[in-house]
Length: 596
Image (tube, rainbow, N blue to C red; front, side, top):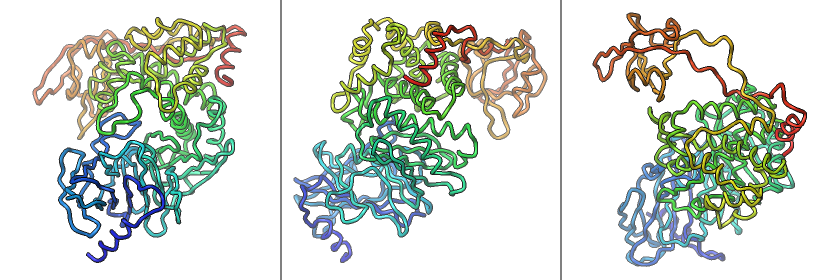
């Protein structure tokens, strides 16, 4: 009790600055137990103090229920008297203050989910994300400041874009408004840090999870410097951060998440040993860096100020993520980190993924954006038939829109011009609506874009690639003259416990027409057993057009279904330069890939 009273007296000591809405002290000791210990001071008023934890992390559009990892919430007044705490909602706690004034709350957060949006802690390193860590006062003003003190274990440091406290006496004290607090992840541990400078601004690569011999930070810094400078040139200036952190967590997980002055990137610790994997790591870094402009500053109106307790729906996630997915590759190419072939292969994969998804005829790009909260992160066996990715289709539509604008204006206006104009008009507090984004694009180009947006964004008809390919002198590579002789049903499979199951049955395939279903266990084709890992071998014994049967087990009951194998559709979505392209087409292609 004496120790707690001393702690409270320190917590409640005065400060020259205006009082923050809360002061958090976060400890990671002992790290091998996977818990962060949080002590918080709140300037409570009235009889009750209500606290909440966000249910989602901005940039990842799914309710994640972060509060499930919060444990042992207790509260005391400045004199150390224990106060009643009651959980009143899935992510809310209510403290009965009895008008006691400043309140100290202690709790701990379990941290063993290694992802870009959650918390993780072990004996090697830690990662914290504000939405999954902090209990915030419900009644605090949206622009209120918060103080944070981070206390790492001995020998560890912390690395974050949180602004240092103006009265800080050490490196681990910070002050930020609520959105910045929740937008500034922290890496804890003994990382390697490599710094490079672009346009007078320091950028830091903070790497944990891999020994020095596996990841060369100096090489990464040279490549990322090219990328940052290319994106700076595209936008016209860096977006206004004082410095920027690439929080590079090398582990078994993957992915990236954008923040205003940092990003968390996860990848395989062997990433530099495979040239293709390293190029993909750089492209992921390109994607997250582009978000420093597009999403974190230029944003759909619905994505700020955030409501952290409910879904924040918008029809414009395709602008936020799809256009970013287009430019992550294009600027990756322009920075010299990939060649023409690698970029066209990347774009081709997106086109193929879109064109082989029956869901493209079911859900528009705008609706896919709106439904992200209930569909995109909840992929199931029917997603291929009912959904379309706003990343994938968004990137393809961005490519087509870029070409459309270039052609309509004789190459005077590009999608880049639209994005820069949108940044100038809508970044900051305003944001844009879907109608405003379309209207701005039309104004910049001086062309009516209703038909384009009706078809590509609001519609479900197939996209027309012809004009874009003709403008850039591209073509889809002709189909192989010697197609795969194996029979094809169109289903995908997965194995479990030595058995082979159907994973997906796309609409319109022979498997769909035959009545095969996801989760059917595949046993035999005709009278021949299908090996657990041998679906391709088994179908290879069937010729296109052959009529036979497939024996499956469905919910424990054997069923034999007649099927007719077909020829697998020829690959027609691989982009390549058209050998018959004119000099003008070749010049436009070169300018697109290397200049503007």
